[in-house]
Image (cartoon, rainbow, N blue to C red):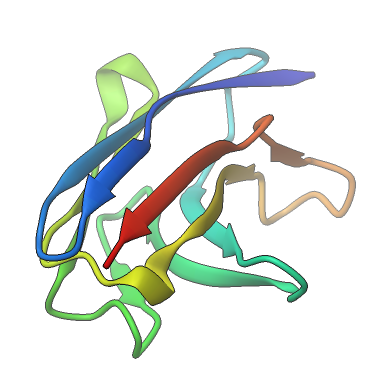
Length: 118
């Protein structure tokens, strides 16, 4: 099992910045993809960005250019720097970790609320 503990988030005005972090612990051997997903009120969970163990990064169009994902492999921690925040960025942000070679090894954090006021 893998445990994911998120921190960061909160309330910020439009145009501001926030930083999220997510630390993985437990059976972290073999994790080869970590990322962030956002669930807005009344909507499905959607990808924000993810990064592979090789360093490849993918961003959803809505967040590209404003958000930056990074990973510290030694600490098994993934970060999300969010700049130029907009009210539509509001939602619960979830950390995800995968062992893509294993169907059952797909883990989620508890989620952290990000609220952007106009």
